[in-house]
Amino acid sequence: LLVTISIAAILMAVAVPGFQDFFRRNRIDAAASDLMAALSYARSEAIRRGVRVSVCRSHTGTNCTPQPWQSGWIVFTNPNNDDDVDPGEEIIRVHQALPVEVTVNANNNFQNHITYQPDGRITNTVGGSFLICHVGDTEDARRIVVIGTGRARVENATCS
Image 1 (cartoon, rainbow, N blue to C red):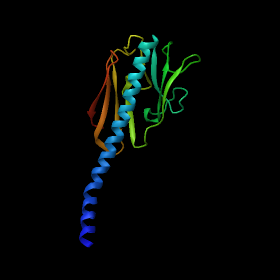
Image 2 (cartoon, helix red, strand yellow; image 1 turned 45 degrees about the horizontal axis):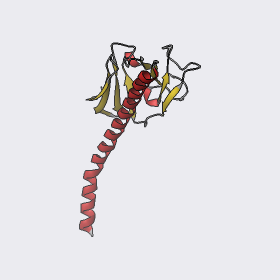
Image 3 (cartoon, rainbow, N blue to C red; image 1 turned 90 degrees about the horizontal axis):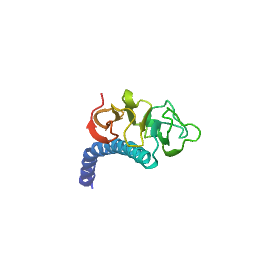
Image 4 (cartoon, rainbow, N blue to C red; image 1 turned 135 degrees about the vertical axis):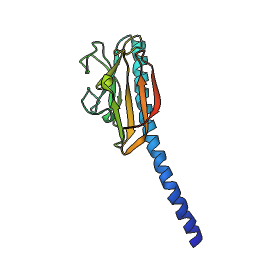
């Protein structure tokens, strides 16, 4: 019995850090996947509806707010290309806050929102990126890069 307990304790000591890394990477990948899905959906809806569609930061789910991206976001029709949901503009999708361990930082081009035109391109022709990190980990992160044509890709990154 003592040998069995000793072996189990050794296995647990080895396995627990591996599981922590697994869960940390899973949170980062899930957040990147959720944001990529919102961007892809906004692009496809802009093309399908023939109107500008934006994704903005929102912790309320009803309008754009200055909270960080990890507090949530909304996808909405934005024909007048402003920074918020106006009367008559439709909120298409709402995403709730991410786990508190995950941060999402956008470069200056996407600080508040990203808008897709009816042809699928973004209004900011330069493009930009989002950096998704796990609090306390600088080595394992994901960067979502959006180019002027509206296409987005996920790549491995580091948080610094």
